[in-house]
Image 1 (cartoon, rainbow, N blue to C red):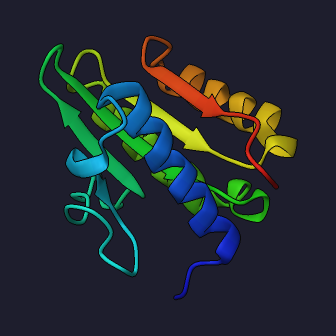
Image 2 (tube, rainbow, N blue to C red; image 1 turned 30 degrees about the vertical axis):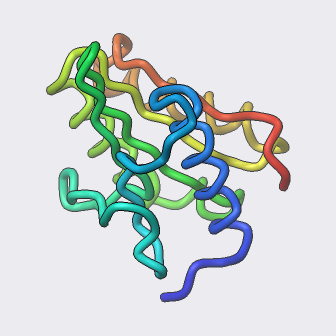
Image 3 (cartoon, rainbow, N blue to C red; image 1 turned 90 degrees about the horizontal axis):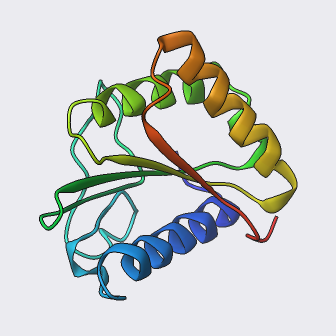
Length: 136
């Protein structure tokens, strides 16, 4: 299934943010699930789902799992299952973070969804970030 141009823009924003925040602007260590095989390879499956972005930083050790969602995708059961799997993976490595890139009109919903899933699973300590100010 082909990705929408909106989804591809969100993935690019996610890669740019992760590169800036964790790798001094260098995206070479970031694995991206994209049709072009962007950057250095495809992320590993986590709980049966492949995230859009995956990276590991050694000092301090951090795993970054990133997912981009359009407003339509955000409300699906598939997305909820992905987020559950990705949050579960983040519990395995202290200091991990789940980053969600969504268009700015749905950032509040995305934060609420992540919070509800974390409360349901009993994982309030997993760090989550919803990127805001992204075009919708």
